[in-house]
Image (cartoon, rainbow, N blue to C red):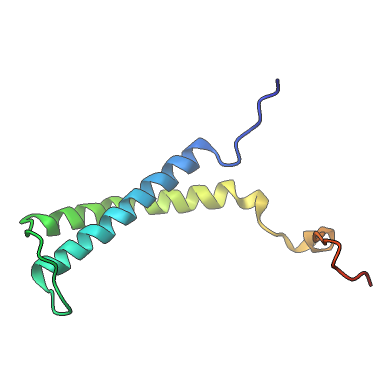
Length: 102
């Protein structure tokens, strides 16, 4: 049996997963910072975490370090997949039976 190649490379998938986890964690800790220190538009009755601002800042720093690596690697790996001006005449569009032929 032939082994099929994955659509995305392993490093790209790992960087993507790490950035997703960091973004979701930053959103959650951002809400907890808002709930602990501001709350002008409403608060939830959850206990305040003393170091939540530091945790939120640390997540932001990690995201700031991971995101440029993810962007550079994505652009490098996806450069061959980008639409080039000389490839426009070679594009074909799928048409089902309801399409009208000209």
